[in-house]
Image (tube, rainbow, N blue to C red):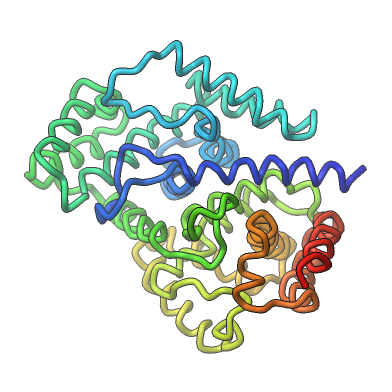
Length: 386
């Protein structure tokens, strides 16, 4: 019974992988390409984590969970740029159909709970929904207005969005941020007050994680995954599979841990677990520690220390929360490998025994029921391909 439940949950998470292929209208901060909805969802959840004091009294875990799920329906319904004419009724119909399909993939007691978070975001009535909707106006505005390649046409579109469109609400909801964004738009800088300035600087730096490529490929095998969208996906994995943790965990801490667990890869890059470089753990640890010093050091002091401590806890993998987080960080690439015909295993000539020692040990330690479910799938792949 447990294994069939895990299998359903993994089926949902595999379907969610398609969100990485949904392209949005706004670009990354460096202007190199358009953002996709999965990495946007990760960044939005990170914004919620960093800016939590802007909404005192909210349930931050609920808000972060909502950010992870808020655009999942775009897997089927697609993204609808707010500066273009849209048929709202048609979009609503498509999104309801998408919700019907996607959340039905989950066990009967879990699908409705996840769907309720999405419906709450859409309605915008709860404090958590209002907070995430405010950030959902802010994050893409910063990205677009910081793009060094912003054209006059792009600037006109941004002005319409900021003055008469959806983001105009920021003038009342978050005045200092609105004034700063308008300063970027008008090319007349308006400084953010402390500590907002430091937080925004950290969040802008975090945008670079979306260009850090991994060995793991998307489930459709179309391209390599990046570390931003990977961080979204494993946070969703943890939210979905939390009930299978070997020890009691605080899922809110696990989600926050996973949102920042790979942020050091902005400087350190990704090291594939099956590569030769992965064996030089001491060198990689020094590089990642220096990256953590720099990147978390961008935050105000009262946030730098707890964020860094959470990252250190993940790396040490000694607490129940970190043990489970590490297990989830091993499961998601494994599933993507199976979906793509064992791409990484083929590339690195990986044996079944190596999968067991490099992946299985950690998954069993943190989520034994998950390993019991996926282990036969791995056996079947190696039986057919070696």
